[in-house]
Every structure is written in C-alpha cells, then in structure tokens.
Length: 429
Length: 174
Image 1 (cartoon, rainbow over the protein chains, first blue to last red):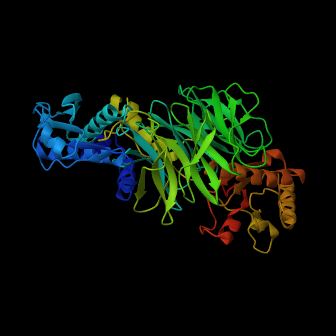
Image 2 (cartoon, rainbow over the protein chains, first blue to last red; image 1 turned 45 degrees about the vertical axis):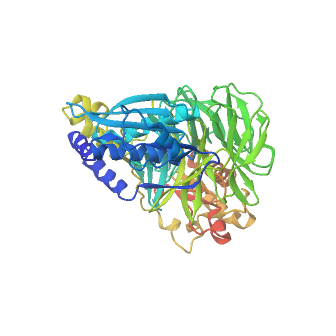
Image 3 (cartoon, each protein chain N blue to C red; image 1 turned 135 degrees about the horizontal axis):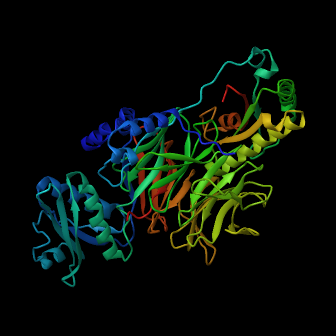
C-alpha cells in the first residue's frame, strides 16, 4: 500500500488516492467454503523455510488456495521442518496420510528481491513430481504463493490452476455508490477501477486481461466503455441513441459483441474494440441480448424472446438464421461457454427460482447445478473447472464459485454492500 | 454520430498526467500493486440538472406526472395512461425546443441484461405513442435502466409493480 501511495503522488493523482482509500475501507472480500469434492487428494505442504514472516505468508497462501479449490485435503505436517533441499522422510508423510508433499523456502537476494523455491513429491512413489522458483519481493509474496499453488494444482490434476488469475465484480455500496473492483481470485488485493454514483453492469475481460468492457449508467443511460486497467484510461465504444449494453469480446480481442437499440428494439451487433465498424447480426423484431462468442470465434450465442419466451439461440458470426439451443423450461438466459467450447453455463428458471444450469453442447443434456432463488451472471474460470455466479444469501448479493457438478462451493461476500456482476479474468501470462 | 463523453474527473486526471515532468509515468500512470498488474481508480461524474418551466412541475398539471406503469413481462401502454402520454405529446408538439428521454425500468426478477432489453421495449412503447401523437423523432430518445434503478427497493409484489415503469424526463432532468 505504501508503495502504491508513493507511485500515485509521483503522478499527482491525489483524488485517485482518496478514492482508493475510500474503496478499500469496506471492500475486502471474504471467502467461505461451503462444499468440497467427493474424492479430495491428501496433500501436505510443509512449512516453508527461510525468513519466517515471508515463509508464513507463502505457506498459508499455498495451503488456502489448494484447500479452497475443493480438490485437496490438507494433511497437517505437525511442524515437521524441511525445505526443497531436504531428502523427504517419505515414511513419515505416508503415515500421516499424504499422497503428495510440497516443501520449499524463501531465499533473499542482494537487491531486496526474494526467491520462492519449492519441490513437489509423490509420497507413495517417493519421486519428484516437479518444482519451480519464482522471483518475488516482500509485496509480491502472495503472488508467489499463488504461482506455487498453480504448479501443484496442475501437476496433481492435469489442468492449469487459476489461483494467479483475477476477478472483476461490482459492489453496490448504496443507491448512490457503485464500485467496479478487480481482485485476486482469492478475493484479496481488491482495488476499485471505477467509482460511480450510477450503476455499472456487465464487465467483460479482454482476452489479454489488460482491459475491461462494461456498461455504465453515469450518463443516465447505458453506455459501453472499454477501460484500460493499468492507466485508468477509458474510451466510449458505443453511445448511440438509445441503449448500449451487454459487451463481450471476440476470442482474438479485436471486436466486441454488443446490444444496441439505435435501430429500434434490442439487436446484436459486433463493433471493433475502438467502437468503429458496427455490423448488425440479428433482425428479429424481438428482444435479442446477452451475446457471447464461442471460443472458436465462429458463433455468437445469445438470448431472445423471438419464440415467445426467453431462450438461448446461436447465430454464425457472419449472420444467417439463428438456431435455437435451449428447449427445457420457459426462461433460459445468459449463455456463457466454457473455454473448451463444450459446455454452456446459463440461468434457468425452475420452480420459481433462477438457477445456474449447464448444458453439454454435444448431447444437449442439461443439469441444474444449484437450488438457489436468484442466480445471475455466470462466468467460467479460465481452466473451465469452476463457474462464478452472483446469487443471494441472507438478503444480500454475494458471489458463489461452483464446480460444474455443484459439489464444490465457495461464497465470496463483502461486509458492507451487495456484490454482483462477476467476471473471471483470463490466465495471467 | 458517436459521442465520446469524457467525464470532468478524467479530464483533470489526464491534465494532471500531462503536466508531470516524468514522461514514463504520464504515459500510462500504472499503479504498482502486490497482486499483479495495477489498477488505477477513475471516478465517474454525473449529469447536472437545470430548472424546468412551471407547467412541467406544477403538481396540479398532468404534465407533472411522468410515469407509465406496466404489467408483469408486458410492454403495452395501458389505457389509463393514454391521456398522460397524449398530454406530453401535445407539450412536445408545441415546444419543439424540448427534448425528452424516456427511461424504461423493470422489476428485479431475472437477468440484468434481459431486463435491460425488456425496459427498452417499455420505453420504446411510450416513445412510439408520443411520436404517433405528434412529437418529433429528434425530440425523443428511449433508453432502458433495466432493473438497475428501482424506485421501490422492496422485494414484494408492491415494489415490483412500482418498478415496472417508464419515466418521461425533459432536458435538464437527465
């Protein structure tokens, strides 16, 4: 934080500093794990060696990340001292029930930087599964912990971890204060990218993670902006007569699918990321909204009431006749495709409740994942293993990360205000 | 065609950046953070409102009434609101310098973006009626606030009915 303040003073942005301080006072997300997978892998993370304060931070981040994923069970090491250079006492760890073991240390360097090193072992085979070293600094220790957890996750599950990714979401503090936040995937390091008296909805990450497209009502109507996160520089991408909403990026980041009412009704268009070259894709005199590109860039999935009730359709990016995708039930909205393009998350009204559902696109098989009343805005983790949604708990807006089978659940909430409109960012390259 | 709206705070921010001697910092002004690439905070500014002629605000005049209410999942202007819409159409016809923003709203149930589109249908319905009765296209803009600006923040039938609404605002009010 101190370093951040110095940086900001240097460029003379006192107003921004004040805004930031205000934002962080009530903005911390807390995570509560409310469900876990059936067959969790027992893993031991030995206390990291080296500088005790730094080691404690890294150790706790790695353990918390793995635990939170719902795929691992932490095995208590009982303070057994070891680092990545120790020959592991495998029999000890085996008797404690660990299938995998990680050990490491934090080493300092002359320029004030630090290095976090670790090794991962298969306890039963008594072999090395992998290891890495990450250069870090006192303020980047949590990031190093996330990197280490990502490697362990990938080695043990075969899929990349998402602990180093970021999420965006909107906090409604009260009727006159809305904040667009960016936080680490564990809810820490939350920062306000935009503070407004008017609502902000539909944030969408550019594929490279540098920009967010969103809809802001600061001009008393919905207008689409693209906001560069590092600079805070914003451009208006669509402010046509009428409403401008529902932006999502093409997989190559060159275009946005948007909804414009400039020609009457809500129609789907694509525009360049700078707002030029609007091309209309839908023509039906009905509601057409919530477009999203398929990961191969060939289709745009969207919601329409052209058949009498809101259902999900898809249309080729070059236009043509839309095909209906959802059939079960009378209200199916907000299609969001998994990164591999095989699964579609959406919200379905069932027994009066709005519930997260998933469809296997090959078989069209639908599974209702939650039993909530008010699920909204699903967004896939970049590895496709979890879906983050907005939902309600105790009359307040919270975020919930849910595995595709509904077993693993984490709840993210802030103490003051409603959290909503989540968007899970891409892999951090 | 397209307007680039740059809020005052952003202009100040840009001005502050350009006046700093440190070119590297002014180019992007990245904020160093612990978790990854930085995020700079921007504060969005609202729009000022101005005074309106008394005829539009006098509570005894029908023109002071600005709201049309709708049934659930419906965007048809009901008969009881036709006099109200006709009165505003007449005012707009006689006062061509006035412009109107029609904001459609919905209750909280369902997807935010779908509700934004539903609110647009409601605003369009009022706008089309105003145009039919003589208001000019360039005096009218229909937009939607979806479920984002509830007049009643409750979670029951009464609140939902109050929020299924289109509001007619004159220039100065938006």
